[in-house]
Length: 309
Ligand code: NAP
Image (tube, rainbow, N blue to C red; front, side, top):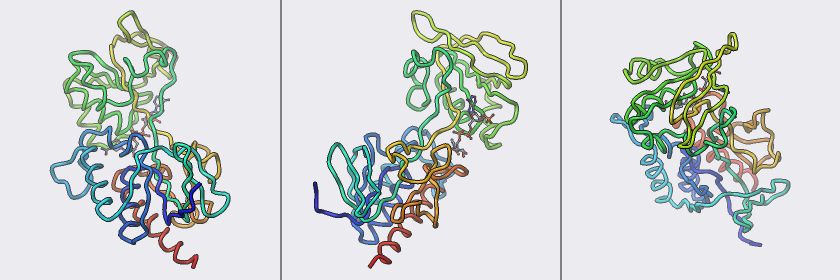
């Protein structure tokens, strides 16, 4: 048990968290961040960020996260690379448990982001982290001169497919319909690539494997249920993300998918608890919008703390 009560605890460390850290540190609130065991969030798994203003040549995701962290730490953000296990927001100061240790805070900013969704097709669990991955940046290099699948029709799928052409001999992108959520520029980059074949109206019914691992998949046409077999030794699932809110144990209002609902600006259903970034955002989900929301949450927390006096 600690008697030390912080002004602000920030949970999570993507662009939202680091920006919240930067602003609250500069407001002299001496923020403490629990960055998670894999600090930096989803952008640690991204190759090039070309749409964050200020980087005309683009920047690597991990490089940007290191710079954001450095900048916030320079102004006094204290970072611990640990995961928050549970919280108690029923009374103030709020309680946050980390590796069994209790931390108290007058306010909390939740920036835990989102994690990849898996398909859940038959045979998937056995091949997870072997032939089947949700991160081309992490695992793409294992598939040199091999044929791989990418599943999804959004920007993530386009990005993964394009990135994988560096290694794979062929990339087949499967999408369950013929309308794509991906931005035009990213769709076209993938569609025009000579190593990428796009197959529409195609879903994975089950995965096939042999002694050496993943060997292919049974594909189904959702329009008529017809099936066909495709061979591949690697597959990358890029069908979206779900918010990381399990540790909140329903103490904050969320929508039915688990995204935190903002009530007044960035404040949640519990006064003094704020949220920013992909854990809230069902619409934009960009590094720049997450950073902007992190700034808003820090400013809202600062104002709220002032109003408590
Ligand atoms: P997304 O835009 O939600 O797209 C998910 C895709 O997966 C959709 O095409 C969806 O199909 C498909 N899908 C969902 N569940 C499926 C299932 N069970 N089986 C088969 N297909 C399924 O997700 P995202 O691509 O991860 O992008 C999320 C956000 O991040 C977007 O705002 C995007 O702009 C952003 N992002 C940006 C960049 C960049 O700018 N560099 C890179 C990556 C992501 P339906 O369309 O049929 O629903």
